[in-house]
Length: 149
Length: 134
Image 1 (cartoon, each protein chain N blue to C red):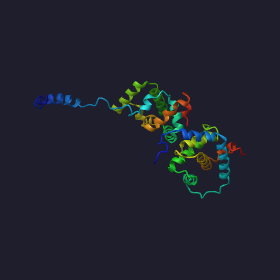
Image 2 (cartoon, chains in turn brown, green):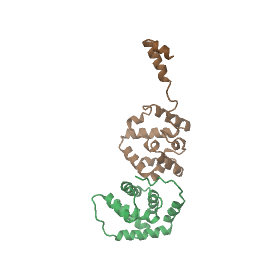
Image 3 (cartoon, rainbow over the protein chains, first blue to last red):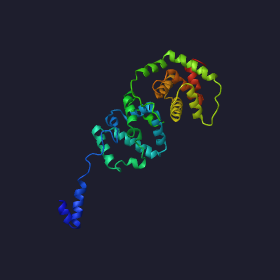
Image 4 (cartoon, chains in turn red, purple):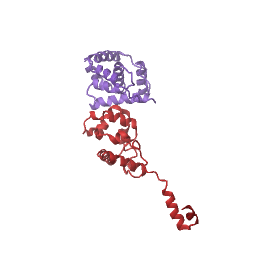
């Protein structure tokens, strides 16, 4: 193959270059823990439960996230809320696929172009995710007041 | 900055302490603490209340990152004013879970009293009600 490529003209270079370039692509760029923590992929808690738990147990992290949230416009706030409720509505396989998609395509998640830290409370810190999911079942499943802080 | 939440170990000891807060022994400690805090002379005032707060915590043997403890104090006030913590015991329980492992219930109450006097003195009645004082 290389010998043919060396002898080929311009068209051959393009073809050979494409074939050689595709040979080394990774088959998976996300793991079960990155960019989305395993606890978040697996949890059956709702968004409200998780946020209420983090409010109690990772209180400064929650406070900083809510400060950032309140600095967004109303449109962006609503879009972020919708998007994270959508993510939590997925099963494990779909969440894992989403993780893969965001790892391999930096433009995949449109929300991130409007507010880079839109999911920081949920995806960014494995420790926060672990502490929150440890106790999230103790909180009410539906409690939109977690967004009003 | 050391994260006081970094240790994930057993929660048995802390739950006993948390229960103590909810029982009479916790309240008795609170009564003493509130009285002492109420009678304390004014601290040398700095321009920065966070520094005053940190200094007061140090007298109770509570150390840690200054901005972290200031955050907890302010958030405790916010939780009281929002009604998320309905009374002083719930608030003390919240504060206690933010302190480093090995902290005592007395320190939890002292933290709360210091936070209220520094950041939200208008919540003072919440403490006094719990201590049975008027």
